[in-house]
Figure 1: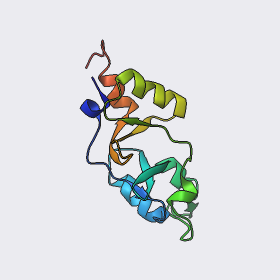
Figure 2 (figure 1 turned 60 degrees about the vertical axis):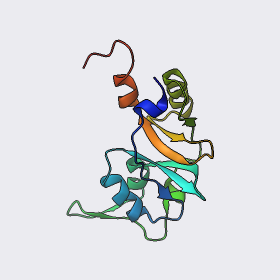
Figure 3 (figure 1 turned 30 degrees about the vertical axis):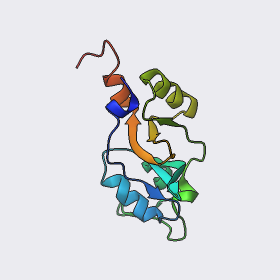
Length: 131
C-alpha cells in the first residue's frame, strides 16, 4: 500500500501570510490537527491547532483572541518532512518518526501538496490492525 492509497484529499493548506485566526478557522473546519503551510505552492512548514493556540490570549469568560499581527509562518514548525505519492507505508512511518509529527504532507513530483497522511490512518492500514 502506498501513500496515495491512504492519504486524505483534498487538503487544506495555510498560506505563509494567512493570519492566525484564518489558520485556526481552517483547522477548526477540517478533521486534522495539522496543516501544511505553503509558499509559492511548496511546503515550508506545518502548523497545528496547538501551535496556533499557544499565541491565544484568554479572557475571564473562557473566550480567547489571537494577535492580529501574527501569521501562519510565525506559528509553524519549520522542520517538515514530506513524502511522495508513491512512498510505501514504511517510508511514511519513517518520515513521521524523523519529523516527530503525526501528520505528513504528501507531495507530487513538483513538490505541491496533494494530500495528508495521519498517524491514525497509517496505523489503521498496517497489517494486523483490528477494526
